[in-house]
View 1 (tube, helix red, strand yellow):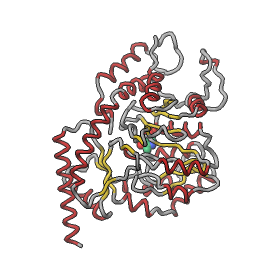
View 2 (cartoon, protein in one colour; view 1 turned 135 degrees about the vertical axis):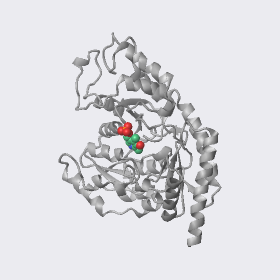
View 3 (cartoon, helix red, strand yellow; view 1 turned 90 degrees about the vertical axis):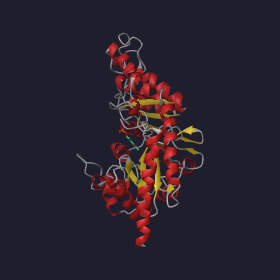
Length: 405
Ligand SMILES: *Cc1c(COP(=O)(O)O)cnc(C)c1O
């Protein structure tokens, strides 16, 4: 998964270009920067590599989501439908614009179940936000159809699925807008950074201003820019963009290594009939940053996790069901509306009401799911060794569970 594993000369060279001029900011200083514009260059590379008309870099994936929501006019009183399985950043962004996160069930794609989305639509629904978790994606055709029918915005949180494709198009470029994160553990890293991608000029222009205090960026003199609306500072720095520029040039290498390692590891688990795999929707092309697999029951899954831990082979494999960052059962701070400042009564009530909600369909999936992250550094021998050891641990647990049954 993470591009940081292949950090080297290329990144150092790009960063050095910026250090040579000393202009660490992405805007202004046209003379002293001597033609070095790393953020602009990275934005151009993103439009080209991922096939989106516009790209606006930001300081993080979270600020990219916040920016996209603001640019799409999502705010106070609006409901955003999102999955129960995601990273906390997804609901943080919804809350940051004053909107209400409406959590709905996932299916075996590990993101939004289209039927659950339909059932959750109310007159206040403004946006559907699938989160393409762990390298693969939602059934985007089904979600797009629902959005078209109900005139809703489709915003893709593709932060974890750089390189994933759906029907030939990059995830994150299919909805009204989409985001990537370039934080330290993502497929491409800038250390910290993110991007809003969109094919809509209005969304781009608003994102551009919003991330820079509302500057309209129309003049040559930054100090004389007009401010047609209120923005914030979600800018990326030239140093961060420089790292990303070196990384995006290596993306194809990252993806081909991921694919090779993923498929080889998968071949070991495929031999076990009790194991099934995450569903990739028709026409989908998994980025292969994770291998996501299911066991028959929660009990067996917990025993496999314990066995892998015992054998020292759990590192890099995640049982998200009991993880505080990724699944709603552990989000007590959300369910108690533990904010540092007052929020609207609508938001507060919606969050507190999560305490009374149950998601048995999501539980039934997440309690049986293990996601193994794929390293770019594994040798073939190491993947084979890992596959054999994982398969042995699983067989041991399955045998025990048969004896107990
Ligand atoms: C990483 C991530 C984000 C946020 O990214 P940051 O750059 O860490 O702010 C948002 N959504 C998902 C699904 C992520 O994995």
